[in-house]
Length: 272
Image (cartoon, rainbow, N blue to C red):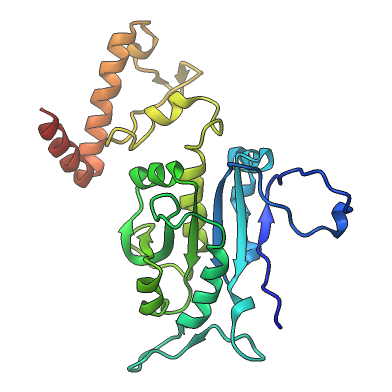
């Protein structure tokens, strides 16, 4: 009987009383209640990557969130652990097999809520819905997320249908795999978890939080190479500062992201 491969865990683990030496124990469960990301990937050593640095890394060590990687290769078929095959109907490249991916997903979904609202299952795909700040907030409100990192020409469509997988894209471009996209989405989500940033106001004032791009930021020195900080920011008039920042956010959004500006105007009309 083949033993089910165990996921590789990162971050603080739950401490439980036991008579078994820790060196002889199986991986213990993550800190109770921590938001968890489970990543199905052919490259588990790519994680935590940049997620292990700075604020996300510290939050990982503190147990505010938990990361597990499931190696897709462990579920491959045959002596060489094959995970892919040629596309039905012909064509270039290889496609991840439904049976192989399904076994990995079954492992990744053990013990998680069945509701996709409480635990989304994501496939990183260039044809998916574009990731945005609203989606990051939705993920942060969930108990956790499972992410399938694609490779080659993609994954068999049947497994996406069977597991009600949401396809999500980082942007309108193609990457060699989903690992970097997964890390970017996890970073955007983890920073919204309670206590990660330390200052809740930061997430309310930054880009995209109100449908607009962020206003310009300045700090010391007040005069740098002949460029000075706008007087309104040093005036002490907080009302004027807020008006200036709002105007700058609107200007930048209108100039750089007409799509966001149109969506913002439509939302404003609905509220009015």
